[in-house]
Length: 527
Image (tube, rainbow, N blue to C red; front, side, top):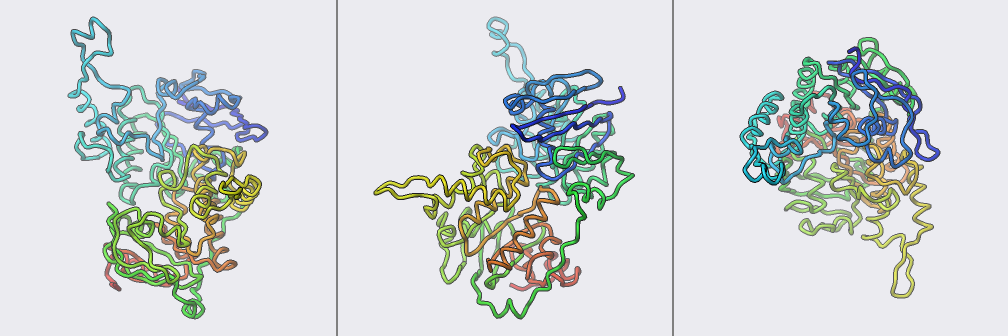
């Protein structure tokens, strides 16, 4: 068997939109194959076709040929792909929170033991063989180095652990020939990501092929054997990793030279002369895994204020504390008004808009349209896009259409219609919808938490440049929270480093690397 998977001339249209145009690739057993491209390039659609997803068949099907282990296949549902030995580790977890780890790993493939009743009335009355299920699960967990008890419920686990449970579930399946890893390291810490890459190599060494979908190009260079780059639904290049470089891949993905974003010089004099519009004093937030233990800082009007630090040190907790999502104490003053930290939505009503790090869990209504998602918060909080007819309020449909089209164009949201369900968009385009919804609030303060996590280079560049434009042209005050220090240094005026739940230091973006390293290690203490 030369190839475990062959995709030949795959073509897919949504209405008049060609989303995949004669895409072909082939993958060998035991090979780690990177599938790369900007969000909206066609990667998700290609995987939907491979897995026989309903959305493909409901929209006219596709043209082309799929072969698994040399045999042509026609999958009509995901279970067909599973039976053929193809599994997927999703970026957005497909786990049941109320079930324990064993139950999630064995879901749909439970081991059972016959009983007297089952022999009479059928297999449905067989008894679960919990001992065998635990034994199998333990083998899968050990294979990926996850030393956690099997009976622990998934609800409340750190996201890194959830990712590893997903991988253990796929490894446990029989006859696995190919695994698709969809942005598997996007939610992991650096050490967890390193562990995952090692696990991928181990899986591949057993003859199981891997399709690796990621935007982290250094990881591609570290583990992949070959790669294909998609752009606008077409194959730009397919080549061995040894024959390319990070810079070349990035350029192929976006279709243009990728320039380094110039470091902002800080403009200290202009910033310091602007009034202080955000005052945070001894903020404490009880967010599990991201506790804030007394953070204090001030922000000037028109400033992009960065908040960085290592995972689990509290930076993400700050935005969630502002929003009232977790128990919080201390004082936060926005444009002279104190926030009621115990009142959910108080910040929204006082001119603060949020782009959450959890775009699917908090930021979006996945089953609703792009248009509805963009307008929903502004309608409910500010009563925007509504017409008054006596005591009644009705939707102002024309204004809604016009505004949705404007935001789709401005943020380059890749979609076939403003009516498209947000849940069907790629991750980068979902993030753009979140930003559009926040800007529709016409905020005085915009808080963006992990705005570029899990999205491609092109979308990342667009979002960062747009935030800079909002500051320069509209004077909008922005708080940007990110795990990517290089991004913070590229657009922020000042950067607060959070360590152990407190502000360790506040630095200019062009401060020496050593200063940032010391601040992250809590060597320098300021508050």
